[in-house]
Image (cartoon, rainbow, N blue to C red; front, side, top):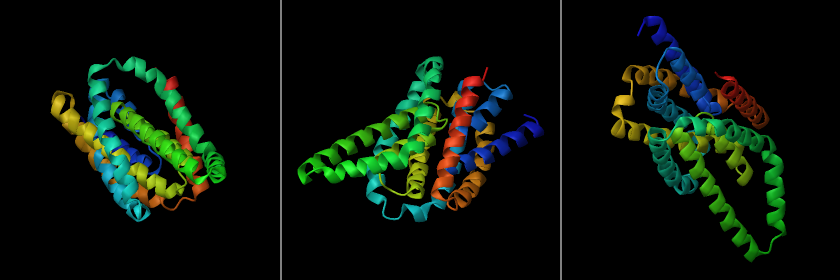
Length: 262
């Protein structure tokens, strides 16, 4: 690996760590970069996943103030992220990626749509809850919690498998089915996505250590470590509408890159 190649991979890691913290599609920077330099797709994906864990840690720490009062929520969803991350990582190692790649742009598009319509859908959901009796509301809340947990699990499986725009999809789900502030949800997204990446990375290291290029993983880790700090400082200052617009734009760019990629 030449110095110029190493420098570009390091910079890609910084960009990915920043984007992941603010929105959540940094893989669409690092993964194509690694493919450009001739790394095999599976090796690129695995090494990228291992490297981006560092950025998730600094990004989550940067959002620690927004996580105040969210302990019970995180404890409820963390097991979904753990199970989903391991499941997705194992699927990457045993399945043909071509079939799943075809549906990835659709999933990202759905996430973008949910983020865009999030305030209206949340208001509609709150209005409906207000019209229910207390008993029916309890039933409705339990159903909604089950649906939300299932979608968090499904997003985690996707994140363990590929991870590109995992944050966009997760934010779409959370903004639609919860009434928390956008910044609080972004903080939760960072923690859950980091858990997914971490358990997926651990699975790769244990099950397929030959697929990890530690030079690449190390460079991306250093870069994303810095990017997570940058992303948390930038993202926490963005007004909700601006953050929502950034998520939508990044999601659309992600879809375009995946659809138009050779």
